[in-house]
Amino acid sequence: MELRLVLHVPESARFEVALKVACNFVKAVSGEPQGVRVLVNAEGVAILKRFSEVEDLYREALKQGVEVYFCENALRAQGLSPELLPPRARTVPAGIKALVEWQNQGFRYVRA
Image (tube, rainbow, N blue to C red):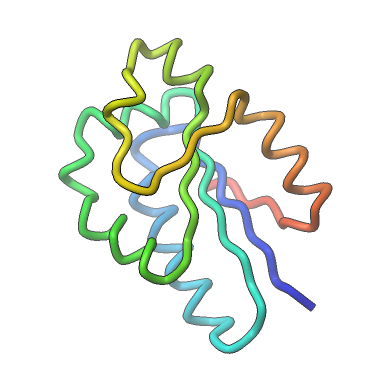
């Protein structure tokens, strides 16, 4: 059975914690099929204003196969350009819709 986890980050102060939890999960299930996604929406996208503070941890998470998604609605609402997105970050049109779809695909939801 594939272990699938989606970490929801609606607050920028929780982004670093979410990346750490994601990395810990990957280590804990080493050798087992797994998928880990981090979904950043609402005020959480404000982390892009100070991304240099978490850049090393972000890179480590990517190396471990963690996928990071930012909500396009939240980016617009916060007045943030998609150009601020770090390398390999992805976007979804609506974070809440993505959360529901991913849960329907077997991802387990955890709020960071």
